[in-house]
Length: 449
Image (spheres, helix red, strand yellow):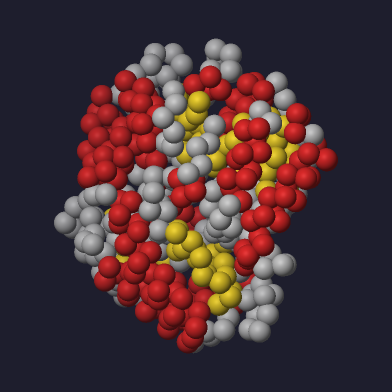
C-alpha cells in the first residue's frame, strides 16, 4: 500500500522541527483569538500550509502524521490529483449559477453516480446540499412529506448535526446542544445496541436493544405516527459504536412493516471509510434514504440525500434546494473523488488499514489496562479508555493521551458521549510506514501516561 500525495512535492514523512504548536502557529493563534468567535474550537492549533497523502504540513515546517482526515473528509487525501484537476477545470469555466436557476451537468452526474453506488437496485433519485446537517434535515423533510407523519425516531449516542432540528436529533449535550435550545419537537430517542456497555453482555445486546427500541416506539409514540427512523450504521461522534450484529436488520424490518422511512446516516461512515462503499452494506441493509457528506468530495462542501425515487419525489417542486447546494466546483470535486476511489480501490485500502491497525490496537489493549475496548471497521477504528479495573469512562486520560500524540507529530481525534474514545480516521491513501509510525507514537504515549 503506497501513498498518493497528489504531487511529488510533499514528502510522506513525519517531521518535528519545533514545539507543537510552533512559534508561527502561536502567532496566528493570537490573531485567531482576536478575530474568530470563541465558539469555534480546534483540536490542535497548528496552522496548515499543505496537506496530502498521510501528512499535514504546518506554517513552522512541521509535518504531522494525519490520523483524522479532517474528520473523515479527505479520504482520498487532501490534494488528490483527480479532485484538483476536475475542480480546477470547473473553476475556470464558472463558479456558480445556482442549480435552481440554470442547472448544469455536474449536479446531474453526481446524482447518477449516487444512484449507482448506494445500496439497492431500485429506482433512485438524489438532492444535493452543502453539509451533513443539511442532508439529514432534508431527509426528515422528505420522509414527512412522503408519509404525512411527523414523529422522528433517533438513538442513544447518535450525532446528526448542529442545526436546530439536527441538534434535537443528536444525543450528546456538550458541546453540541448546551444552551442552544429550545429544540425542534416530535423527536424521540430509543436505545442503541452498544455491545461494550450493554448491561447483560454483548451476546444479548442486539436482541434486547432492538426489542426495547421497538417496544418504546410502539407504546410511547405509535408506529403509525413515525415518519422516519434515522440511524448511523456505525455511530460516529457517539464513540464509533458498531451496533451489535442483528440490531440494524431488526430495526429496518420494523420500519418496513410499519411504513416508516428508514434513513441511514452515512455522513461519516460512507464512501469507502469502512471497507465498503457504505457501512450499512455490512449486514445487507438497503435504506429507503441515505445521507452522505464528508468523504463525498475530497474536501469541498457537498452533501446529498439519495433514496427511493417515489420517496424523493414526495416533496413539492421548489421544496428542496438552497443557493449553494450542489455547487458546480464541489460537484466536479466529487466526481474526482469517486474516480480516485475506484481507480485506487479505496475499499481495499480501508480493509488493509484495518489489517495493519487493528491487531496492533488489540495488542495495546493487552498491554495497557486503561483500554477497555477496540472496535470499528476499515479505516474507522477506535479505542475506548476506562479507569483500570472498571468500565468507568476516563476522559482525562483520553485528553492527555491525545496531547502526548500531538506533541510527537501525530494528529489524533477524541470523541464519544463520555469523551473517552480515541478515534482513528487516516486518509485511505496513507502509506503503511506512516501508519506503523503513528501506532509506535501511540504506544509511546500510553507508556508515558
